Length: 378
Image 1: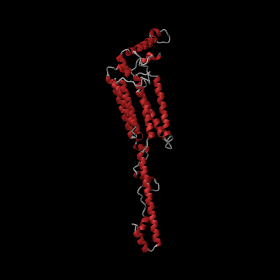
Image 2 (image 1 turned 90 degrees about the vertical axis):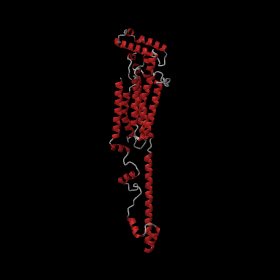
Image 3 (image 1 turned 135 degrees about the horizontal axis):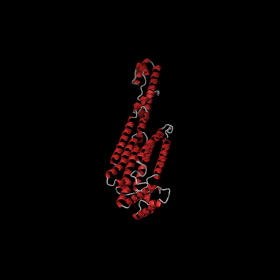
Image 4 (image 1 turned 135 degrees about the vertical axis):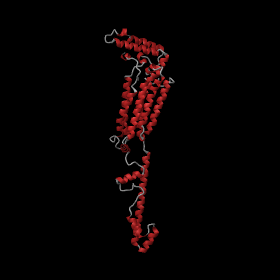
């Protein structure tokens, strides 16, 4: 088969870490725009605002992972057309069967086959059989793939390759879930990363594969790589769900407190107006002396001078919300209630985006540093 003409590679069998990082960071921009755009969230319907970006993420991830599975580097088991759990006798039969198909003497009988290509395919098949025929090499290959076979004597390189994925996505998960509205997704993202690390530990250290029945045609290291490809869409989907379920309790409590203050101020105003009206009526229908005595005994504001001063004094509410609705009064009301005078989006714009830029610089600095470490180890 044409696929068997490829030589064993030390690269990823299903996609690559770098491709995932670039692809999903680019996709993050339109996803965030669709979630926060007023065109899709004009009436506060978050379900509708999340439905479109979530569908876009699902379609993108399905197409990308499906394409990578179709174009993946064939494993040694694929080259011999046997299952990863096949015994040695079946592997030997598969090698003999496939060697007859790709042997240069057999292939050269066809005019459309290049001699160099046929020799390369046969050498690749022989190298795959040599690995699978050795129990120790086969165990290393099942856990780490061709890179593990090439670096079987260098454990530091294998550990660096394992840690690179977790360090990169741990930093990225922290950066994209810093906002208060999606902070719940940080716990979910870290939990998913921990579950993936536990599975990888069981597969590579304990040699336990609990996905053997679900994915029988993939080697153990291919299943680990497939789970690596599935983690980015899981992280971004968790971020959307967290944003959908978020309720700002602090802002709600501040609004309730503000309305309570406004109602209290209104009650004080009504009490004051009623008292002034009663005082003026008593002064108009009674003798001056009797009115003065009535005023003196009825309330703390005694005498006509105090009543006149009370009429002329401006009303000062307990809370600035009980005003005529000016922009200054609204700002004062929000400040008194401990609320921000600007929406969170405007506050972030007023800050100049310094925190976001610093986070991006920090992330890419860590990313290129680990790239340099991996390259130096290689």
